[in-house]
Image (cartoon, rainbow, N blue to C red; front, side, top):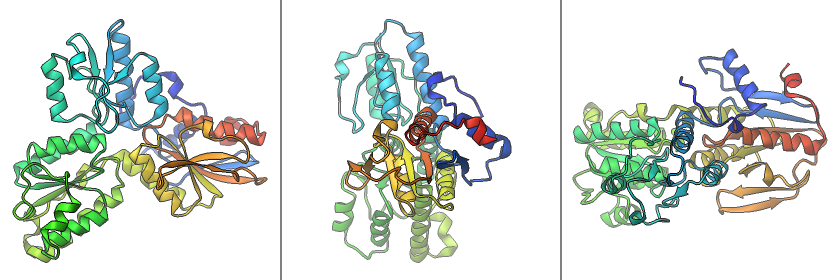
Length: 402
């Protein structure tokens, strides 16, 4: 796989060594068991896969390349490069400005841009409407387009499904940047509908089977269907794709459920005429990170830590998984660890940061740790180092790995 030229401060002295060791031991990535780092007073179970994925490293490389190649020019990011506050703050410190927030609200009017400016398209991609808007200004939207190739793979698959007469069911969060972009591209080729979770998938399935009225369908999927969507005629032949950061297991569960619905309605003999096989659109990095999180859940630990941006979809799903077994602290970086007894953790359900006053108060503790695909390894390093510092442990990573 391609290696990327990203700023050295995104690298890490601890995690890079762990990853290099595991890569040498398991080059085909078949083993999802975590790595145990035993520092004596504290033991860390490090997930097999986590941190920057291909798409994120690609985006960061291109963004810093744009900075280096355009001294003196105004450089804009369409929205957050990725959902990590540290990365976005560093880019902002280099003079980059954001045109929109994560919800698509305009921060800088399009009319303030000129053809001499530089605009970077984030890893999530952009809607067709926004791309056309930028082109109308005379901007070069290809040179610094960092759209993740796995997101583009979903777009291409959606286009092919549309050509074959399928309606596109997108498993995603309808207000997420990536889903907005995917919906824009898919709905240009085919009727499209966004389903957030299994609960909504069951509403869709019950409507297909005629078990619920159109009013329930309309209230559930308001503002989540393409223009002129006709649920009575356009749900006879479907294909499921996803926002690449969603739980892969949930995407498959939704697909399997809708396949069973189509079998009930049309029979097993003609099932291929009513639902497409779209397993090939699932993102490898999301799959690996989630499989590695399941690996963490196979070991015993006192609690888990997940590091990443609080608005990161893929990171939130890792928290959801780990919460099934462990008390799980979701932190953006090491600054959320205040002392041996205090940590601030983001609650994914209430959407607020909570204060916990029992944290590192055992003599020896075992901690499971992972991070989202948009989190630099260096930030995970800093979390580990902060805990070691608070516990008064000075053993080197080389000694522990040995």
